[in-house]
Image (cartoon, rainbow, N blue to C red; front, side, top):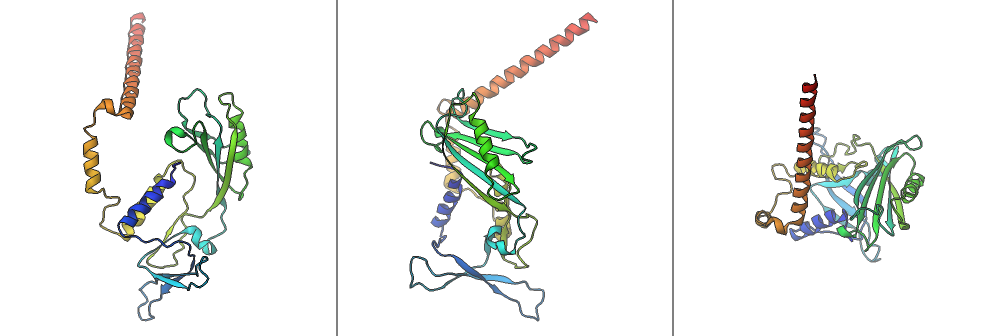
Length: 287
């Protein structure tokens, strides 16, 4: 089963091929800082490395220090320095026994439930089935996301699932679900404390796509690696893209579907314009 987590996994695998190293099962105890000397007051503090705790799997292991030139941390990693969050992102993932919309051939839908008096935030929903390899055969995965001011309060999303499953457009039942929440810290709050090479990733609020994360990643990359193109394509990828341009339309089902949809839209638009023009002529003739 595949999902958006594959993005991170793909980047990790690509980075490993190009020399990145991953250290698992070790927690960070503290960050090492180099403090500038008093004579050079303009120089900022810098991160020189991370001190790791002993391995949980090896009682005989010792403390370990990893040197670095840049440190990237999520704002949640510095929760002790953050203000108390006022908002939480609440998510509920449900496995449904059947399609949420019976009449639809494939379950690939976006659901938006507007704010109400009982819940002042919108609820975003994503419905996906086995055709996109994210659900077991004949089942549907329902993702619901909303913002709440109370940590771990599942009531709003529970009611939303019950309301969706009570509609006449579905006969699905919820087989399993998991619900979790995490804090949304103030994005404008600076928690680097003047440390030159410490980069804090802010909270990404409620969204249906990865655009915000992409923008943040680009900004961070350009800050650490100025002058280098972000997500530069390899020569092999460029060759693959060039080859795909010559694929016949008969072999490209998605292109054929899009072309048909565009043609239908243009035909309907032209027909509407003709009707409007004809009505205008009739009105002129009557006047």
